[in-house]
Image (cartoon, rainbow, N blue to C red; front, side):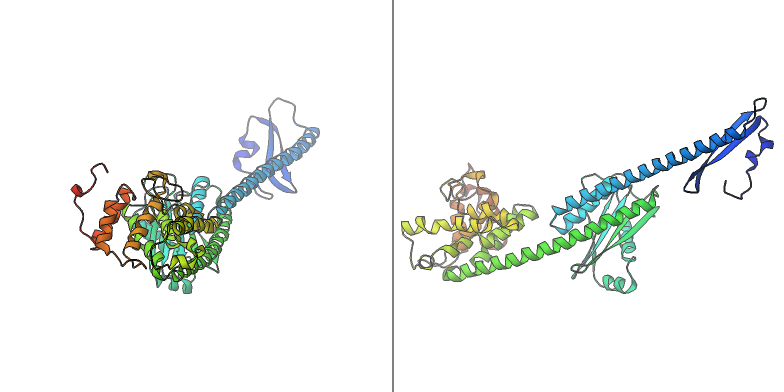
Length: 445
């Protein structure tokens, strides 16, 4: 009932024959009516008096304040909960240095705390665009395309035209929750939130639900806050990548300097990197580990920067003292160069142990078998093959076929048999050698 509005017919005295008298008092908070208290007294009882009305008026004022306080308390609790969520999300983002990991963190957070069934994130890149998405249930391919188009449609006309000139690749970004039943379109609720950052270009996030949220405005406001934190994190990943790229360039320059210092190993590091990558892929190593192996392959001999040139370029075999007292130190020297750099720390053990032998006869620690990191075992095979097929001061290249035979002869002794087998498959595919028969191999391996 609002001031000036007619009394509903159901509340009129004529329709309440059992009511002898009634009192009504508004529940007010700062002159705003938030409710009404109504008291009825049956026929035959003493009617309400002015004193009763005054008492009810005092009570209604206190009740209005109490209700307002309860609402305020609930609202404050909600705000504290929202701020706590944003704070936890920001802390979680601090540990993410990869662009996809940042977006996955957003997806996980939204999935856990919101009644959202579909999330999309369009990454606008220089060469191509990528539409990352997640859904609480299965999405048909046509629906994914439709969501992608709807996300792109949120841009202005000029930007939309620029985006549509390049290919957009959809990619499901899985989270820890298994998918449920199928999600159909159209959605009852959808919202696009722009993600803008000068360094990376333009991005757009999409959120959709099969049911309209009860508190739509609060949901949208909080989603926008999370997207803003995501934008900051994505900018930070770009800064991190820039720092990493600059450092890698410096390290590559050092690797080139090492190759230049040793006139007989020009291009050696890059060749080892490529061979090691091929072996790792053949062994179905994860993409992340392959990246580590690539970097370690490029930098595996970085420690030679500290080895005297007269030893590196000696036109003949090294003496016992030169090899054991000086040359063997290059692995430890190289490992020490990278150990204190956060994004190169994973290379430490691969560089340190890339001269360890499977049977324990290598250096610097004489490790055996699986005690040697797989990446180091792969590098050892790649390094040995590249060395055998290169000219040295004291000998010419052995040739690829002979180098493959020597790797096979040391299979299970100097080299990990699984790594050698993977390399031989790679070499066979490249036409370097024919696949050796199983009879030629040690049956115990």
